Amino acid sequence: MRLFIAICFDENMLDSLTEIQDDLMRCGVKGNYTVRENLHMTLAFIGEYDDPEQIEEVMRNVPLRSFSLKLSGFRPFKDMFFADMEENPDLREYVKRLRKALLDEEIPFDRKKFLPHVTLIRKAECTKGKALLPEFQESESMRVNGISLMKSDRGKHGMVYTEIGYVRAF
Image (cartoon, rainbow, N blue to C red; front, side, top):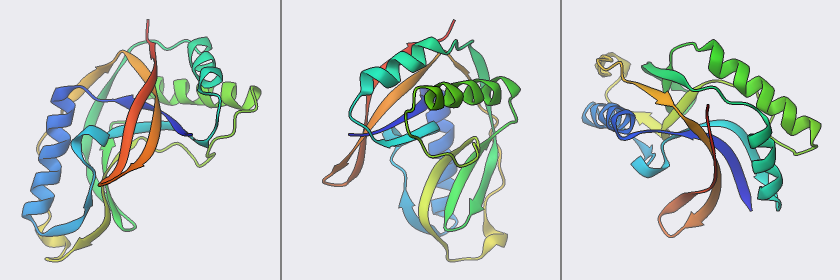
């Protein structure tokens, strides 16, 4: 099964992220918009792996202290649009420890440098030019109280992400 470890968002953060998407849509940005229920922040992309229990055990063994995330804007990246989060040393330190634990247990994952972001749009085309992109208004924040082990399946209308494990912060 195709797996990843992520932070899932509360309703207020999801509202802010979908509001940014709505603003981009109104400004003429076309592309594959991430559906609300799939908006998340990936901490480690595992890919095909058949032992989710082993991954969840690693997640449980890496202490997670609750911390806050704050939305800091959005930007184009290649053919996508990302929502960015403010720099957060607690998040970076946790991801570093989590990825080291995955390595120690020989669980394969995508080792690209961690970039805290949320993918809002894939295959984006800015039909009216960058000058017409909306200004960032919101600055939503949320408390991260746990992380999720997610399964990714191809559905009839795109990818379907399902939480199959959860580890609560302390």
